[in-house]
Length: 602
Image 1 (cartoon, rainbow, N blue to C red):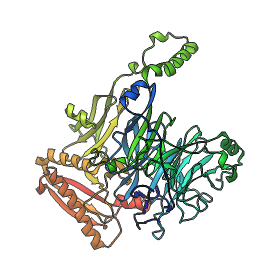
Image 2 (cartoon, rainbow, N blue to C red; image 1 turned 90 degrees about the vertical axis):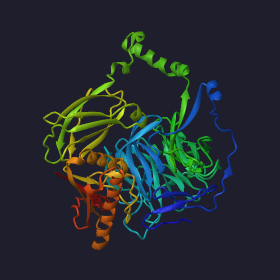
Image 3 (cartoon, helix red, strand yellow; image 1 turned 90 degrees about the horizontal axis):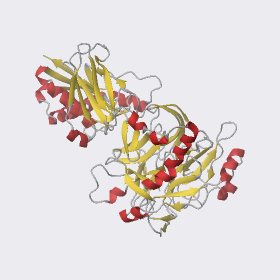
Image 4 (cartoon, one colour; image 1 turned 30 degrees about the vertical axis):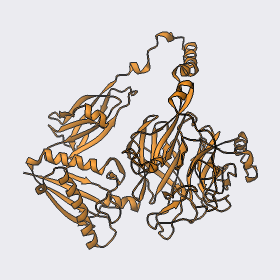
């Protein structure tokens, strides 16, 4: 049965072999107590150095760099080959961050994602700018444990034109429907659900798009894909030939394993004729096969996905470090992993590079022996220029200081900080290396600071980038706290729209402390005013706002800010911001929770 935590919309989804797997809605489903998987027996992939040296092709398994934390990273969803959405868990809250892959093994978070829905949002399926995703119900607190599918569009880090998928995909408010996967031609949608008529637990279903634009009645994928246990997180490959998913049944290494089923041409023929039926399911999918260790472990593996050919590059999540005595510092809970197929260099040259060169020689009639590498023609440096301005007034700030440092901690040890001053008209210009992510901060006397992160990829052909800084006179710090909590913030700060930024609250306070310390001799007072949302009484929020602003003061003092400079007070809920048109209640309340800081100079 489900163990539901009211308000948090969380539940426990039990593996058949291991301790409970804790998932927030909508990444969880019904528990099937009759789950009795068989023990997987077979040969794991040999990942030893000796085997790799003898093989022309082999698999490499690694944990992703720069995207994992000690909290849970549930899923990675590809918008395209580089742009990604990462579903995370921070305390009791599930949220989504926008990011970008720098290479197969490493990515970086860019910002949060603005979604006009209240509730916990799950993994995404993207085809171009079109999205299908799941969200739990946060409106009716009497209903917990449910989830429904939505469509929307994405532009930058904002999701808009959101619509709930109606019946027959929608069943009722008590049924869990989640984890969608949309085909490249948008003609078929796979998802996981605990709706009636399944084989047991949560099953994988699919629906096809009909001529009139409606979705067909969902069809169960049958016993080649589903079991009496739970099947979750389906992923349809771009070519439509394979269905990857997680299951706690069949022949299991332990917990949830990742499986794959081959999809026959008969399914696509029936889809094209709009004649799919439950009676023909046995012809659509092959018996699923376990992806074997070391991809599957005695822990839980979920959310398989890939940006192209899954045989070459397959991403997934696993909580295997939860069973390690001393896990790495940046790992814990669920982390993101990748399986790569490596082709030895000499074989890759024969199989891939030579046909491409030959084709180009025939069609363009060029001397391939004298061709220069494209990367050799791209300038490895770029020029960054712009102005430092007072926010809102847009007046230039002369002699403002701009500090540049690499985000990578290893590079930070090797390189010293670079500092520049703006000209009399507030302008600046300097040269940086491509392929390195920088954090740039502009600050000035009497003002606070503006800061952003920037990475220009090595393959980028542009030489000049223009970026302005806007330094505020009154700094609004949006440290995002859980309800009724004042000393344990969520990881990321919020922007003026209530969307997560790419900066943690610790990093933000580091910048604020540095700004104050560097100009402390010119400061009379820093006034801090705490604000809360509109939930609760005036008296309660007055106290809560004061506790939260006191927490910020305490953190600044720990960072070296003189205590006598800081003056803290609370407005509670008495100075609310105006709610925007069509703004969700959750987003509005996130914007309300803030600390405003004003610098009073001598």
